[in-house]
Image 1 (tube, rainbow, N blue to C red):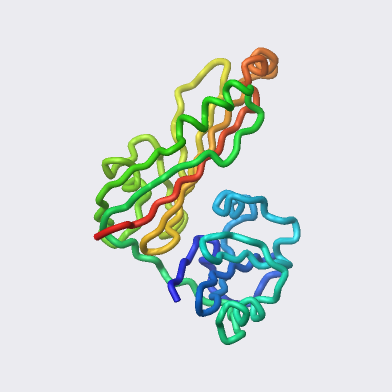
Image 2 (tube, rainbow, N blue to C red):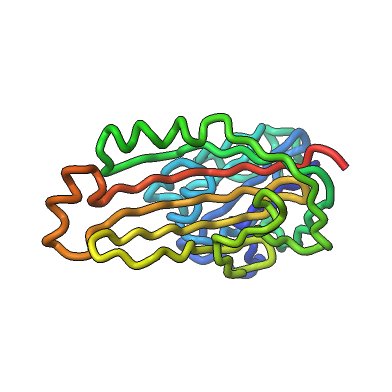
Length: 233
């Protein structure tokens, strides 16, 4: 079956730690299971849903493009979805992105602590945003190439693994408002990638907090999720 190897399971499969989270990638012929290598908070960003407090006692399942948490034993999941009833923990294989036409979309996944007028401005800004471009990866995943024109001069990316990057956007110092912009980028499969962007506004000092709260900028946070897919050669 087509394997979608998320950055959630890049650890090899030795002894299983008590708090290890297992990811099951399921298709028409059963599931493949892997150990998560990122934190519960990072998993929530990738999946777009909260990570349960007892995640280590469940399995994160990807089936038909949807993430769900399941208490069903992994072998039973595999059997129910067309497998042989055995979902052993597999060793991660490096993903090689495929050259071609890649299409990207973005949606707002959450806005909190913001003034209603500020919050209302964000979704229309990204609704329907779509970009299409030809990317020649050269066999190596580089999230900068996902930006329009093949360059990302704003985000400063740091390679965590071959398929997972974290990034920040340098911001000009402000005497009143502390703005931080953090990003992640994940190669999910040879023809699929995802990214997240989080923007936070905080007062530089407690004295500025009251004034910023009036305009909805004290503790305001906005989150966006980007989806990229190769659509043609």
